[in-house]
Amino acid sequence: MRSLPSRTAGILTAGFISLIILGGAARPALAQKDIQTHRDADLKGKVIVYHFQNTGKSTEFGYYSYIIPENIATDIKRSDKFTVQTFPVVMEYVDQSAPAEQQKNRIRLLADRGREFDAQYVITGSFSVEGRIIRIRTQIFDVHELKMRDISETTEELGALLLVIIDQISTRINTELQKDIEIKKVHATASPFLPFYERIKGATLGLTHGQADISGDWGDIYDGKATMMSLSFAYDLSYFTNQPIYRDLTGSLQFDYMSVSNEDGGSGGNNNYLTIRTAGFACGYNYVLSPAFSATATVGLGGAWSTLEITDTGSNGPPAIIHTAKTVDPYLSLAAGLKFQFSHLQITTGLSWRTIFYSDVFMNMTVLYFGFGFML
Image (cartoon, rainbow, N blue to C red):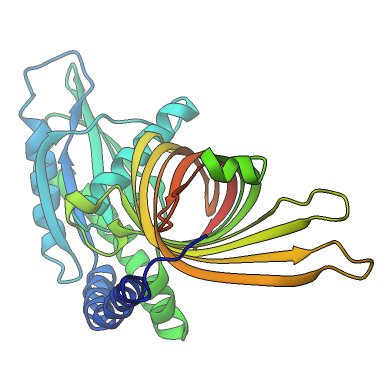
């Protein structure tokens, strides 16, 4: 196995390491500013309000769909503890008696909308008018806690002033929101670990086991099979910025270890042992199929540190190393898989393709992997 020319290998290695160092050095100031911005917004509380759904048969009072939420938003704005934004979109109302799958889909939808607009709370509701009776139902969704609460269910005669009814609903909403804000302030003051947690929120530590199938000339030497262990540190970029383009992207650092040999099982010959350690950066895209299930596509690149040892097994004594070669070479990987998310626990599986660009013969392999991760 011949290595890349030392100058080329050195440039690639230095460039890769510099990229990691510069990225790590540039991020703290930006991250600290972003964390402080998010922390201030969290403690103040941003609320988004959607137009209410008309669940009644009558369309005569359809304009209530925006009158009710607009007035609720105006009442909430009077408190300096909240910033409020309304959206002219009707969000389907799902009550607690709905099927579990429907509730999960709604939570996923509201969580995506809340994160997209950097909101802490999402208010939705419904109304219906039957005869002379108006019924209004309201819910608050906590984006960070992923919890839905039924705040009020009001039934009044249309003869009553609508603004009085809305004022009563707004008072209940304000009370609930202020309770949450006060609790978060207490936690922010009491916990010395909060700044650290905010900095790593959205990160996932993962451990993966893979079965590699080596093809080509390298596969002929090592019978094609090898085991790969990987350690990864991934970060959901939606926690770093609220830009929509980053919402489904993940950046990660990955470290791999693989060792293979061509032991002949007898005496009088030479065996060789190849150890490969890699470190690289990967960017992944998550295509959400359900609240707990998504398909992933990942591309990665980095450096491979390879060590080849040839041993002499012809003597009666222990094998002696008669030749050692070390190289540093770039690699490229592509992967497609599935990810299951259960609260903070992740389970991943899939297939990856990887090429190590040795200077003489490239090593190509496919890896069937299975892993676990824990989201902080």
